[in-house]
Image (cartoon, rainbow, N blue to C red):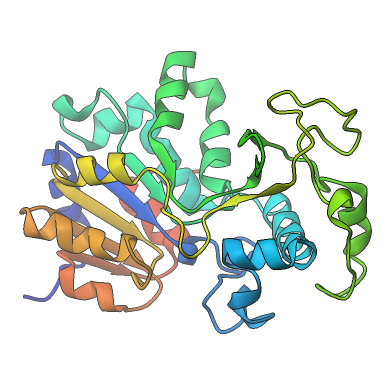
Length: 303
């Protein structure tokens, strides 16, 4: 049976769903929707800048940390300059009890839907932070805990020595990277001791956790690494009544299998995407068009 594009039918399903998961992908953050952030696999995606083999595995980083850091420094700059769009804000609004009470059954009001993002740009968390004055501290903490950045975050680093994870919104994590922006990626070789290190550029020789002087890497998930939060995601999908898929072509595993998992257990699938994709075969509801238009419209939220 062909998927429905009836907004009211979707709203009726939403109103009776006890467990809801939202999965978002790069289609939420393409150039037109979040200026400055291209997707990785699109026609003008970041992988077109160079072979993805150069930037996408722990082995690549071990072999050439200078080039990899220069690439992610540029990606990081784009993400920090970008702003959450109406789709991010519409999804974040589900953290508000007043919005959930209008859209969802009373029994589902205890906590927001689980939000799983395949994007490492940090925009979903920033959209949530924009609601800080409308959430009490307990609600805000719970809402943050209900966001899983399964491919990591470009705003975070992890130390290869002590494993400390730190979040930073500084434009440049070390002086050498700040200067590297003037050259093409890989044209400049930065010595390892001048790349981002645990404790910052003014590390004083300490070996303490979080200030040990070890080499930092971007806290993003590379090929061959296990995505974050998979245990919690798998547990949630076992009971999901409604999976809302936003802006993803469902090509990348393991997220590509989420819809089939929910469908096999009797759950419903709603897809919001700019154009058709292979995931449509699992859809009960399909809404084509810019996500920043369709999502706020159907949820009845304004940003």
